[in-house]
Image 1 (tube, helix red, strand yellow):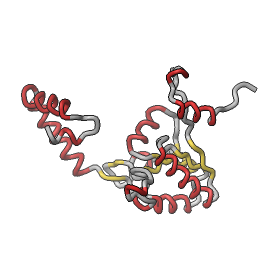
Image 2 (cartoon, rainbow, N blue to C red):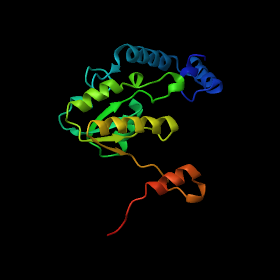
Image 3 (cartoon, rainbow, N blue to C red):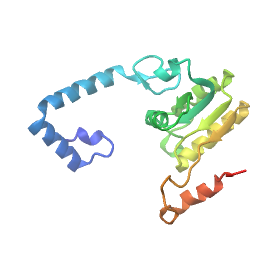
Length: 190
């Protein structure tokens, strides 16, 4: 049960249900899960260019010649790459930070790969840096830091929009999100 608790969102009660399910009803499924997890931990590493999870030296996105080298989207985690790929038609490149700046936690530019990002920017292929860090205090600070790096390299930096969710009702949106939505408003019509 303690081992299941290492997963995000899994507390003691959920871990207990999972363990009892495997032991009482699906031991074969448990063996299969254990084998797959062991293989994944042993064989999945990080892409040497974008730092997302990959079985190969270059992930399938970095290896693809169909991607746009002029756009580079900066995200915090490999899960963010997956979310963008599933929900949008973005066809540029990615760079996965593996976190965000947090000086109080000892996480500085080197810990999130910013020296490697600076090298990529120096190559001269990137024309637009798309900052898609999370809208937290640390995510905003990280986006600002990277935006400054882009400006020093003469590269345009944009920030993904934040605001009212599609299908949301204004009366239920928190004040910070609503304020952000007003700041990021755009023109409609001619």
